[in-house]
Length: 244
Image 1: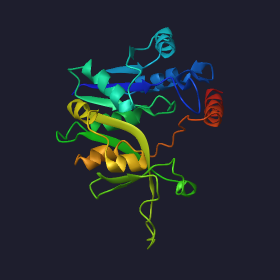
Image 2: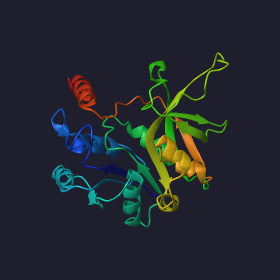
Image 3: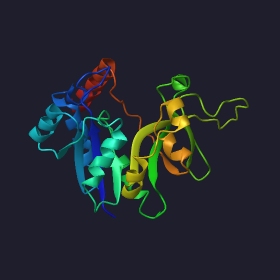
Image 4: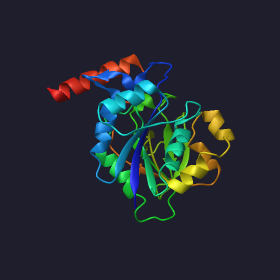
């Protein structure tokens, strides 16, 4: 099984312009993400997929592998599919977000290995137990799964609703790191956006609404995604402490 790791890195960001090039303790964020992804054992290659010359040049400058992709892609999945077309011999593609500089390499390996013994698996992602203060936060996406670990639904609302709150009640946060079988990814990227996807603004619902199953692995990864200047300051503080 051949696996690659792809990091989509769109330059534009409403809350943090030029986000991939934001500096984290002397290195651009895209370099921090790339270096973490390269520590994973399973992928044979790590590649950044960008839409901007500045990001392309920055990755080249630190010796990274990068592809220039169309600036017209409406989502990271479409950008990922363009990369997949350039790798016809790849079986599985792991999609690591370009704003997760603390991504543990073992998470990438776990997602890739989920496909090793399951020829029918099309797509996999992660969940972590959610802190109670995020239950009502629509930016923190929730996921519920069946007893076999396959997604039943993703929502920005609290699910399950605790009408009868049992002792083992838990809410799980979805971590937006995905792995796809290549042939499924190419099909998925051309599917028409679906009603629930549009209502929740959650692209993964398109797969569920079309009858595809998504395996959800449980993890203890509590990363800090960088979406705002405040997030960037927090990550810089964490890296500064780690490097000391």
